[in-house]
Length: 426
Image 1 (cartoon, rainbow, N blue to C red):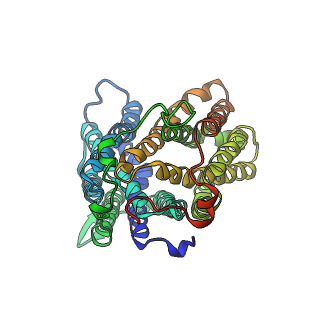
Image 2: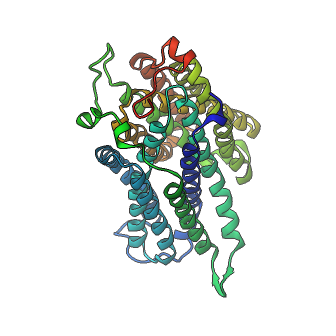
Image 3: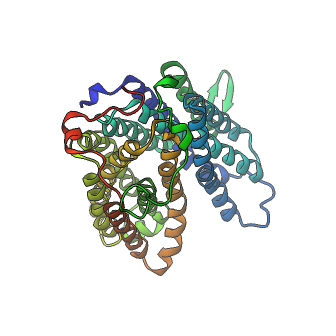
């Protein structure tokens, strides 16, 4: 399969996810600065300012994690992915806009929670719809394309956010708006652009094309009842992805310690943070295509295995250049696991159960990115290298889990001929 053969509807969903990611990643930079600017005041519930800020930032991830399986299952039962995506993006647009009206910690917490609801509605249904538009011969490439655009948006957002904030105030229709307000408006517009793209360019697969038996078996399993493994393979993939996300997110709260250890400034840290995303952008799609030809499991296990030394090395290097190199390797290793991992889950999912199946993976990734920084902030008190060693152990456990509990989904004939079509593609 060539990337040029990707279904145009997959590109539309990928563009929508990119627009959404730009807006969401904007807020990674904007919200802490906005809360610390003095605009936000009021009751802190007896907590310190730093702690209440952390709770506001974390509320998004934890609420989204709780709601994603519910949203995925509801989309399965209704058989309607598109409406969940559009409604979720519309909620995000509203939440992003009303940040500009917030003036208290309570309102910020409520808006952040609203954002989490919007993301929970959007993500499982989007990935499930990509899966249902794919075939076994194209699923890896389609997931790679989708993830590539997501990481482009995630990487571009913080850079644009800093530029927008520093460039304010602005004049809009004769009104003066601050850099913060401009950033919130751009984030809202990004979400609306995503919703419009899905509304205009994407349709749900025809209901009669979906697997009629899947609707009676909606849900996900804990134990594997079909093979010799102990854990259900989708759950095993979800746990491995949780470990990967935690390892990736370790870097976020350690900027001060890393800069001191390497004798560098914020600019070099930004480069080190970004090269991980650069690797994702360039490698996700080709690795996904390769997994359609050569199988999923070797890429997933190999990527997780490479993550072990790449993550540990970040705690051992002593120069900025070496840190950049280790981050690049870490990004390449994660890209090697991501697209094939999602494709393998798609191979296992019934067409009418895709939302629930993928919610396991998306929930795991969201949870990992939420708790990873908290764990890193705690572990660094025991020594600079400790958080990175912990991340390396997690990656090793993930590799062992996938190796022992997940079977390859593509047989030799499928790898060379494209294999059978999933339900909805015959």
